[in-house]
Length: 231
Image 1 (tube, rainbow, N blue to C red):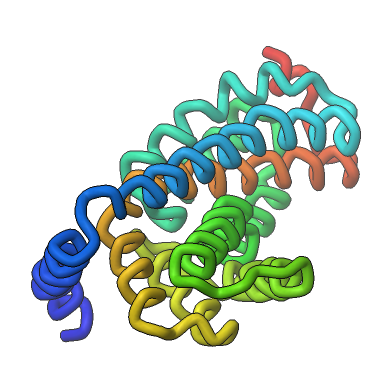
Image 2 (cartoon, helix red, strand yellow):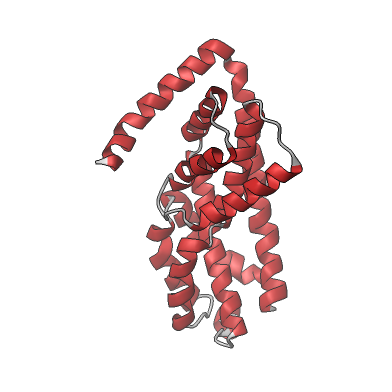
């Protein structure tokens, strides 16, 4: 019943909130939202193309190029479904058959990572919380940024592997920080309205991170077939 209510009525409610916002503040209120979208996209791509290759080179001692090439279809499937759970079968098949990870490692690491390894979700929630705080008039200090980061890390671990869950869990971070005035709620509603493409990119990063973690763990446990990985 709750899913029906969210899917059927939430779009109309968000539309009404945004219409009221634009009527009061004008279309210029979209500019901060554009900054949010661009910032999140840059952060996600930087983490995908810089952080993961560094992890593979330093922790697994392997060339990241074969991984990035073979994991591309997993990331694309995650992007299209926006669900780590739906991507799990393809991720496991790719990790075992193309990346050379032993099935025992993949069977343990991938389902666990689907639940707790939410790199993209944490990045999105930190930037979104900062966007809401700044746009709604709250003072953001270094201490508040650190608290937001910790709350986002904890919240991302508990985020369900389902479409749109990250933006919903974001509200718990905002509530925990006390960002609950009218402007904050309007900023949050704006995020809900425009966040679907962001959620798709977030899922791509999450599932790619699960595969990278599997390769690293397999290498540490000497259960990585390098011939398959480099083939």
